[in-house]
Length: 462
Image (cartoon, rainbow, N blue to C red; front, side, top):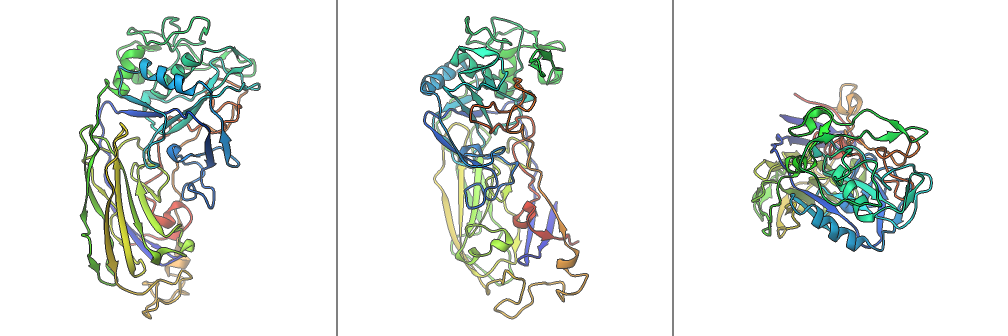
């Protein structure tokens, strides 16, 4: 489907061609376990790397999370490195990478934030905060563990972390005391393995008394080969993540058009098309179009002199369109972008897989002929009217018939334990306050471009 929109704030006409997202049964994941303090920034915060995002968006690898009122420095457990090592052992049979350093900001990633501090107001039985991620569909979110709560004292840090990552991977708690997903856990007898047999799911305990069992969060369709109300933790991890698959090769990326040195005539479109080859079939990608000619066009929601497309909410357009993955052989491109000011443009393509292998960036430089656009909507230096529909004062013109389109930024679990401290309700109160829900998808709508981020005015044209 091709969509053409007139951005009246800067008279920029952007046409996007959306491409379908392909699926596979199993998909890899990355869990980032910081081993040193990290800076977390509210999504959408002005004058920050998170500025282009909606407040409900998430780009965890960049430290951009929803639910914060102001930037914070998050301290992590002194044993974070040991915890990360034990997590690798616990999940070594599955296609999940546990890393100590964040991948690039355009790669969807889970962050597990450990802490040596207690959360005195939380009633979590697991000494952590997690939300349901049924079938392991989401791949971008922030979760935490801590040193104690009203209902959890002297936890085993490793099992608490394994339980949290298990939830990220689509599991629910089980009644089986021999399973690492045992809920409520008995940390005096820690378990680090996942049983390969069906067993009853244990309902999460919430409510004011912290003892009210809530309905099961996922359905039988989210669990493999078991009766309703049961879970095989090992089978589900294989279903949601796949078996361990070593991969040391970076994706092969290329810009198929435009070519380096191309000159585009005034009024023409910039249309970037890229190709990606990746053995694992899944890739994260970012396309950036930058130019000094775009600087100072904040009125058109172009920040930092660049327009960006990528696989997290950190960019103007999220390729994933609310889905967790896009296959490497999908169409990667921007569609036609017309009405941009004349000048020299640098186009950069970046790519990574979900195993930490990054391709060398590909860069081309092109020239767009023509004069700059007046952000106020007046005449360009070339003397033409920036409103191609006619008189800007005409009630039928774009500026008067514009419709505001807001993006769907995905769902968030909120910034706190809103029901008084259950295990499935968002971040605990130990300074995290940044949990991003796992079930609502990873990004906003691809039907956003510049002003389509909810900040600009546009109208549809046939």
